[in-house]
Length: 266
Image (cartoon, rainbow, N blue to C red; front, side, top):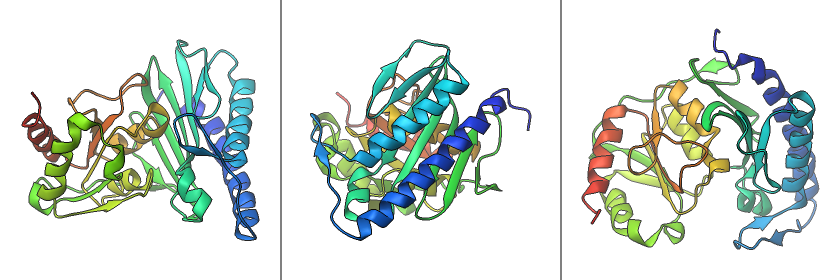
């Protein structure tokens, strides 16, 4: 390994260790009874576990790299204009966590001048840790992963969020992609994108739901596995991109899907 960002992986892995410990502890607590949650201003739920995981991770990173900025799902931004900024989603899939579904994880990423260069995703229930570093092959539990070569839209396997989140201006394009692909899975939070990185599915697309805390960790993982990730205009994702995300395991398929989306632009 020769990436210049390797010096930061140790703290990211230690943060993922802490996340796994807390989420495992709280899952056992949850299985014994109901789990309380609050509703935020954007109508999304948050639990004490979200808050604890993010607090612990932020504290660890702050101690290790005091000059770095921070952006988290629950505690907002701190020094967001710094050269290096850590982007954290303590539980991607809080709804799944609350109802006991196993498809939730912690997303930890590092951005260099806004560009995601390191991503670690901890999936505690499945005991999987996904790692991507710019310029290096991506891995899950230390084993290399690779996206699938596939460029035929009609036989594409896809993953997406539910239609309730789609921006109004994207509904036609979204419906078209639903009809044009072979079949889709819904509601897996970050796991659909991880499955793409491992070559299990070919395409992921979302509109109106993804934020920087949701996608920054996924970018190095997917790109390091041979895939491509962008917004719906084909622009590379940065810490400042919007809420429209498109990922494909094969660059040819990515190009074709962008062309399909353009058909529904004014």
